[in-house]
Length: 126
Image 1: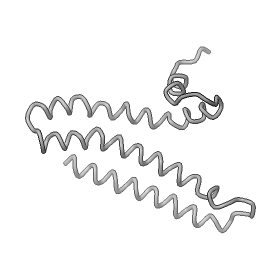
Image 2: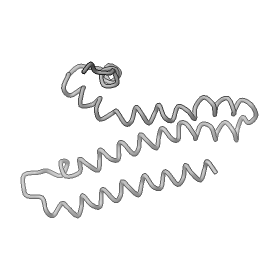
Image 3: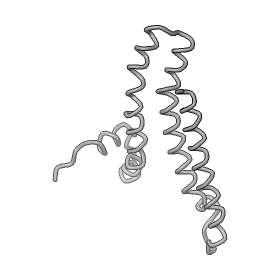
Image 4: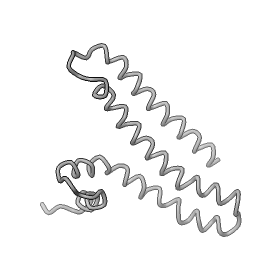
């Protein structure tokens, strides 16, 4: 059943990306000169990257569990599951805050991504 969920989530992610891409193509006729092709596809590229990262985190957490069950089996796969499956929330958090971290990097040139995450996730004093 986990394999079915992985396939379903992948299909949905691809469908969402294709829907956004088609919408951009339809809206292209309303662009008024001056904007180039790369500018027109900025939103679909952003969404493609985010969807890819969310899907990758899902595959890393559940896919490695499936590989462990089918190849290793037994109690080792249970220990892998208890370690990796809860990490899905952590990976999703990293993907969710990535745009804020990239904005922080643009505002503070030369900042490493790890430092940007620390700055974004650190509680701010009121």
